[in-house]
Amino acid sequence: MLTLNNIACERGGRRLFSGLGFTVGDCCTVIIRGGNGSGKTTLLNTIACLSSPADGEILYANENVRGEHWAEYCGIINYIGHKNAVKPQLTVRENIEFWADLTDSGDRTDAAMSFFDLDQYADVLCYKLSVGWQKKVALARLLACRSEIWLLDEPFASLDEETSLKLASIMQTRCEQGGSVILTAHGSVPIESSCEIRLEDFA
Image (cartoon, rainbow, N blue to C red; front, side, top):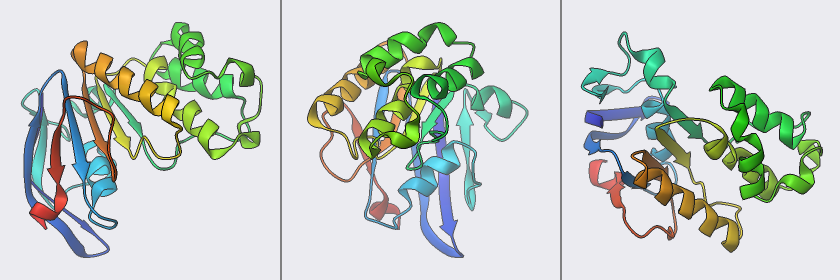
């Protein structure tokens, strides 16, 4: 269980929001909404321990994620941001294998590639792919890597309808299997059951 207590975040010396608190239980999807500049990405970075909150604390299993269990907590997170962390000089397979090996999940690479229709591009260098296909390479990490909490920054951007529905289906499956998903979004999200947090309510 992940709990945010009285979180405040700042960027460039400007407070984006404060007093933010919610709990993400197992089998739960949370959608973070807000306009451009409201702090959606900053919040995900904070949950992922890539930046520190101005106030408040984040707990996982009742332990501060920045305490002695930091490494364990980071090991259960799968974070895909606006920058997809796809290495352009590597092939599709090499990119996915790199991430899978970090969680000793190399046996999942083929299934992850197949799910996102990447087999035909397995040996293609990623710089040759369109933005949409590079996004699929990044999303394949969700299936290739073992993790409990998915943090996804605008995951449906640059995706066609078929891939969006596939992504929604694996989010649903992740939750049914006891995991949690936290994502940011502007428009509609093809997920049946979720709760929403609007950052403007904490500005």
